[in-house]
Every structure is written in C-alpha cells, then in structure tokens.
Image (cartoon, rainbow, N blue to C red):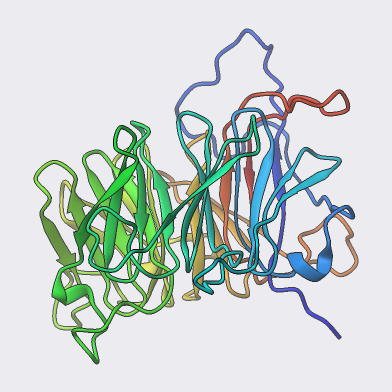
Length: 363
C-alpha cells in the first residue's frame, strides 16, 4: 500500500465580524468559526507530487509548491500550471529537484535545488538560474538551499556551508560562511547535512541545524552567535537536532527539534522547555516537530512527525490539536505532517472561478 509522506491541509478562519471592523492584534484562544477543510487536487500528477518539499502563497492567492521529481507548480484552486526545467544542464547538473520555494517583495518566485536557485517571473513565465560556481564569492553556496525573504524584502539562501544575500542591483550574492562550531560535529571541516531551518527576528537571522543546534547571524555587523545543547546547564536548546524555527510578533524564537517544541526569549535569555505546553488533558508531546508558523491571530501552529497538527496560545497555553480520523473524511489525511506555511495574501487569485481567500494557514 502506497503511503504519502506529505499532508496538505487548509486551516480556514472565517471572520464573523463586519468587514469594516479591524480584528485586534491580541491573541484569540479560538478565532471565529475556526474549521479545517481538506482539499484534494486531482489536476496534479500524483506520481510527481508524492514528494512536495515546500509550498507558499503569493499576493494574488496562488499556491506555489515544489516537487523533488518535477519542479515548480502554481495552483489557483482549480488548475495547476507547471514550470518545468530541463532535467540537466550542459554540465550534467540535475536541476529539477527543488527543495524550497519563496516569494520576494516584487512578486518573483524563488526555488532552490542542488544546482542552485531559480527565479521565475510569474507575469512572463521567464526564469533565471543562479548556480553554485566554485571559488566565486558572488554565487550561491553549494547544497540544496533553504530560502528566506525578510520583512524588508531581502532574499537570503542557506546552503551546506553558509548563507547568502541577494543583491538586486548586481544580480549576485554575498556569502557568509558558517562558523566552525556549526559544521558537522563528527567532521568539523565537512559541510552540513540536511536542509537548514531559517527565520528572521529584527536584525537577526536564526538558523536551525540538524546536528549542531542554532546559530544567530546579525545582518548589520555580520557576527555569529551559537546556541548548543548542554546537559550541564539550561543555556541552550533541548536538542541540537533542530528542524524548524519561527520568530513571533513579540520577538521570541520558537524552536522545533526531535525532542519537541520550545520557546526562547532573546531579550531575557530564557528558554521554555517542551513540557511547558499543556492544556488540561491535552499536551504537546516530546515528539519530532517538523514545522512552525505564526498565524494572523498570534497563534503558533506546529506540524509533527506522528501527532498531527497543534495550535498553541503563546500567552495562556491553550491548545488545539488536529488528528487524522479514518471515519471523518474532513479530518487531516494523516498524522505525519511535513511542514506548515501561512497564508497572508488577503488577495484574490486572478481566475474567474476563484474567490478571495480568508486569512488562513496552510499545512
């Protein structure tokens, strides 16, 4: 029996307030009429989309996703459009195994693959590649890059050996190597293994590594600070195997690792450990956390490797859990959820059959 490894869940928040009223920034324990709706897209080629590695939503409401096997796709709620690339280039580099996708402030769609990063102009369909070039400090770094677009619209990529910032004027990258403490523990000179986790809080970029903890990079003075697990004290994460990081509106860092969910407050240097998140009989277990995102109401959504999806009240600790129910076709398809992504477009897909989406989070 074939088992899919990626869940796709649309969590809808249907506002009940009049349209002219502004929803307050304060967290709501249970936003108005929260419900879960599972949508299955039959237009996609399921043989290729078994392995969706990442997804995001643009300002027009289109869903973009990347596949290991067949590149980049855009979905408008009814039809899918593929942006396929040649399997290899003239140097024999495999180009279509995308692992990440992001949209910058100008609307360009960026995708990362082992060959480099591709930028697509949705208006024209034209693409441009930025390849890893040995000994060229203005090219992207090797590996399957993660992607980050900051609140100022900066585009950053993160690879095996460092992170890089895109310069729109020169159409090149400025690279910043990881400190030695963040490279593979068993072989200090080796590149990192596995995809890094990426987020921004103010002037800092936070990076989660699979095996070497967390690093904070200051975008202004280009300095690094390392946070490692130390069983002798309480000054670092509970595990060095970090798979997800997320900055919230209060400036806190949420960390997902193979030991669960925790929160770090940079201002006070205080950690809240995985066992913190309890609500009556419900709790977030010490389980592999695969993704974290903050929604528009201030709630923190986490995806897990086996316990479905949770929503956490950061202030009161109230919890909501979504699990697969084989008797309920509207429940999530399965309890291993690979990642979560927010929908904050508030826009309208450019399709006569589509309607303006409500504020949502996408899992």
